Amino acid sequence: MRLQFAHKKGGRIPENEIIMKKLRVIAKEFLMKVGRSVVSGNFNLTTVPFPIKASIPRSYFENIGVVPSKLNFSS
Image (cartoon, rainbow, N blue to C red; front, side, top):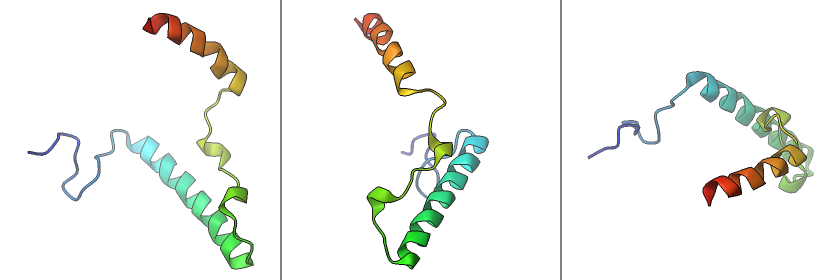
């Protein structure tokens, strides 16, 4: 028995093709940065910058402001 969202070749069926395209672009950009650092000879995964496209459009302080309301809602 297979789950309804399981792909026949393994993995999951993408629910939204637009989001999948964006994720592929982000992954390609990240792998290109890793490849450049490997070729240059100074590979350190902790210093490879995270693609800004993968960030959410909210700041850390905006996220902190949401947490108390979620805690009150869950209790």
